[in-house]
Amino acid sequence: MKKVIDNFDERKEFGNLDANIRFLNETALINKQIKILEIGSGTGSLLKYFHSRGYDIRGVEINKSRIEESKHLHGNLPLEIVTSEILPFPDNSFDVVISFDVFEHIPDSDQHLQEVKRVLKPGGFYLLQTPNKLTNVIFETIRWRSFTKWQADHCSLHSYWSILRRFRKNSFEEVSFYDISVVTEFFKIKVKNHLGKIGLFILRIINPDQLPLGLRTNFYITARNQTKIL
Image 1: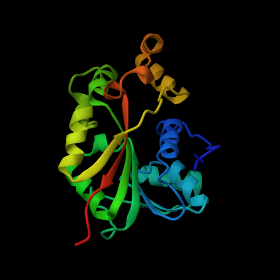
Image 2: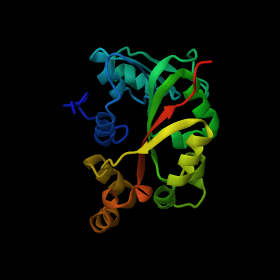
Image 3: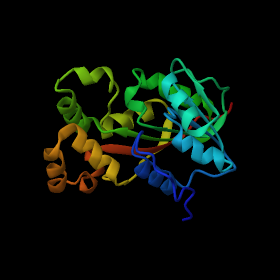
Image 4: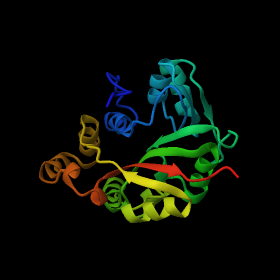
């Protein structure tokens, strides 16, 4: 399989880009003949890569400060601000929608998936990464030193089975989970920053990449829009 992303200049400031890039490579769904939307582009690193290489891609971001940082880092990109889950695009606009570390922050998962379906062409794909509720609750509780404070931020965490039900409820089909290793240098730094040396010690004992997919720290998912044009 030919990789569509290689030699990527990984920026450590926003997300596990190394793992995310490997996921996009493995799906083999990204090419220059399709229209792509990235939801939650952050500071624009992934958007910059595709746009500068001639891919037909646009991005949206809800955080104005990240858009400003993106301009500082990368210049002008096809990136615009949104103020709600409503996407500012006509129906059937994109072949592929992608998002990383976004799904878990959106209070109304059903509305989000319906908006993704609306802007996707029939048969188009949603490619996303989101933390596993079973493992993330433990991490966030330790990180915030609270059983409840983290819920305002990660308000839409899902388990393996609940995310399957969520996608099927919203008429997505061919929901597939990908086996993507996430223990990168970024991941180790994040664990050390939040859990200290004890976190790194636990990583040496329990490698999340070796767990069954349903127990992984992060889900990498593709789902196909089954909406048909009437």
